[in-house]
Length: 199
Image (tube, rainbow, N blue to C red; front, top):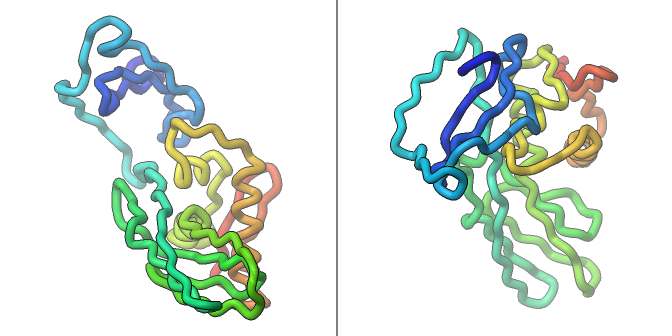
């Protein structure tokens, strides 16, 4: 780190510079700049050693999981399998299935669903919203800013704005309220971020 600039190497050999925020102890989202690499100046940074210091309480940003699933249907009964989903730096904490027919969401690596009406449905598997829930619930009462939640849900190569996190939180609340109508644990602190309350 030099002058609040964090330098890291990527898997393709590039040296990437990010602005470091000393008050949060995290890189500033969206400040990635490739400054050297095999296709820029012929330098390959993959074989370099790096030693990083992090203050007590520092949380390593999470790389988001990738949702992937297969399905098979017989009549109105369908089976879904998300075993092909992956998380590059850990294991997927939970799975949320939206069967596309306004019924309660399913959970788990595999899910079965019977459709009441024949037709074409868009089924989605979401791991992002539950990553956000996990990030908030791990430290009840502590505020997570939108930037911190973006770092949990997306890698640095993906641009998202504040509205994206708001949409995820809105869908997450809806999914939780489909199971518990009185779910109010995720509190919005306007202009600041979100907080999980256990009460």
